[in-house]
Image 1 (tube, protein in one colour):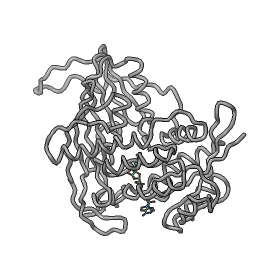
Image 2 (image 1 turned 30 degrees about the horizontal axis):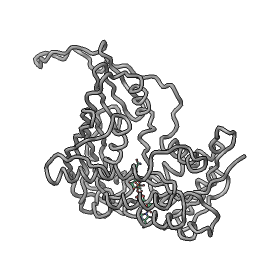
Image 3 (image 1 turned 180 degrees about the vertical axis):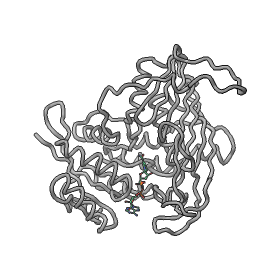
Image 4 (image 1 turned 90 degrees about the vertical axis):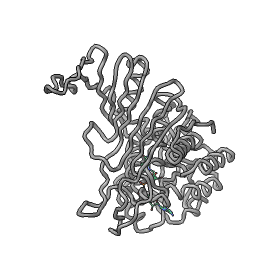
Length: 390
Ligand SMILES: NC(=O)c1ccc[n+]([C@@H]2O[C@H](COP(=O)([O-])OP(=O)(O)OC[C@H]3O[C@@H](n4cnc5c(N)ncnc54)[C@H](O)[C@@H]3O)[C@@H](O)[C@H]2O)c1
């Protein structure tokens, strides 16, 4: 038996909505023939696209609908109508609009009694994130927030290393995230990210964007965070927007933080949209343990055990005799890895349809927003900040 699940995809014409959620997750699941359940049944997504711009929606519905189901996906600018059954029944509302609109859309979906799934951050401050989490909980609605990095092949491999005891005691974690986001000015190409990311009045800023990810990644892999010290900066103060107009950047585009975990592990994360990459990947985690270390990118992981660890001696007067990169071993791929967003969608759909366990709720998403907000507090007040319970 195939069970259809109606999903409203809102803010779907944006970068995340189109690439990750529509194309690489839901279209891919539909092309797979749905999600196979243990009882031999299938869960089949049936998507309706919503947003503000009819032209963009039509083009997207045509392109991806034709390629996926042989006809355009249904679409409408009438979100209220979609939520209230005017265009067929939908069990799930998903939102990938820019962050400041999340609250309004979630309120509408709660009023319509939908299960709710949305992009992170759920809000730009803790009280609002908490309010939204309480709203869905009080209405008794199933709910979730995107925490995609947990399913990236590189970090799934780290999870298995931790479970196998590869590291011994984990001493420290260094996260290096970032790449050069073009300014669109002074002869540079247009930016490869939306311009609102660089305006705090529009919900932008790298701390609110990335600390949500660092929260669930650290919490799920290495343990709960006890306190942090952070610093942010606006390295580049002028960029050009989607229509080529220059604008003043009001949000942080680089952020530095030390997170000390309850178990004593020190995690130091640098995040920047103003750095050029000379490392394995756009995000690399270097994990150092008593018995071994690993450097994990988005897909690949390199390992060094105690036995493979070279014994350097400081002497800048001679050419470095050790090839440091030679003493690392690439971890083999033991599985075919699916897109991380797709895996989380499959789990959420199983949770909604079959009631399977799920822990990535709006309540969990609130903790990421809280970490970002406390990071900003630490930065503004130049001090360590403890993480209180919610
Ligand atoms: N999980 C991740 O790794 C990840 C990565 C990047 C962004 N995000 C999050 O995803 C969300 C979208 O980011 P993006 O990079 O796709 O941005 P984007 O600017 O490309 O897309 C935003 C979308 O929101 C829509 N929108 C804006 N205002 C609206 C309104 N008033 N009514 C209806 N729709 C409106 C836009 O039309 C567009 O479709 C943000 O919350 C962002 O923080 C998550």
